[in-house]
Amino acid sequence: MLTRPKIKDLINRDKDHECPGEKKKTCVKIVAIADLPSRFGQFQIVAFYNDHDKKEHIALVHGDVCNKEDVPVRLHSECLTGDAIGSLRCDCRDQLKASLTRVGKLEYGMVLYLRQEGRGIGLTNKVKAYQLQDDGFDTVEANKMLGFRDDERDYAIAAHMLRSLNVKSIKLMTNNPKKINDLKRHGIEVNGRIPIVIKPNEYNKAYLETKKKKSGHMLDELEQIDSASLKE
Image (tube, rainbow, N blue to C red; front, side, top):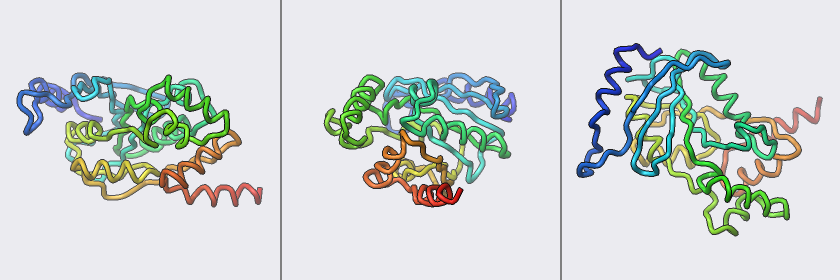
């Protein structure tokens, strides 16, 4: 785990933190760190302040990630319906659980929990998108009908969070190439990808196929899962 002196140092370091190139403007800073024992292992929860979207993003850190290279990292966008309620329309809760379980068994790693509900369109708009999907439109079509892009998320804050924890480079747990490209664009060294594929169910299979075909998600493993299930 991060040692107590390191915790104090990080918080004190960020007390008056200002981002380079921005006049007297604080971007992202660590404001609190606490122990968080969980069913997935021993973590520490790191709370951040940012003046970009004013949302309360957190990092769930296992082990000592400071000054480490190739840190396994998952960027997980908030999904109230999936994460908290257990919706079967998406694979969000299963991905969060799989990520925390995996990280909890490693020497070190982290999950960034980003408050970007509904791929950045918000909870109410996500429900509106669900309503359109009930009428036969897919995820991408529904978002565009509501006036949004396929994916409205921004990973600039995630990049700042990683730098705040002094992470040198990462291996990203993702199927989404946009996350890799965005983090690189914001100066994060991504040295590899760790696939995180969840077996589809009858309610989210079409959703996952849309992510693969229209959003470019790397989900070739889904075909392998389908083939294996046919043999069972």
